[in-house]
Amino acid sequence: MAKKSMIERELKRQRLVKQYAAKRARLKEIAKNEELPMEERFKAQLKLAKLPRNSSATRLHNRCQLTGRPHAYYRKLKVSRIMLRELGSQGQIPGMVKSSW
Image 1 (tube, rainbow, N blue to C red):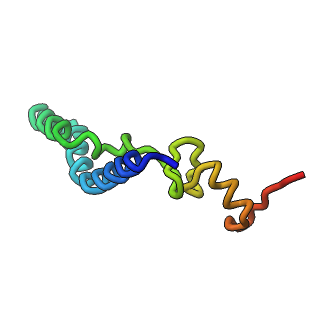
Image 2 (spheres, rainbow, N blue to C red):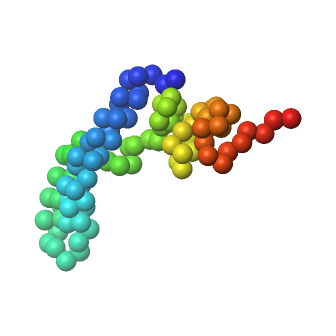
């Protein structure tokens, strides 16, 4: 089980990304528009830099929904390999049978 603080930190990042997504997209669009004057594009980049760092989507990290484990994460199921094996053994994942011999 991951530390509660790490799980909470990741949830805080997710909330910030969602909160600032529209504003970041608008500022990025202005900054990339080559038809606008250089000064206006530069101002947009400065405003973008003043936004919280954790509001950037690249700072998000996938974590297991059940344990919070950051490594060996299966995106399709949103769980780690350990929980995948455990849930498969319990028969809680449809179509998955844990092989044993």
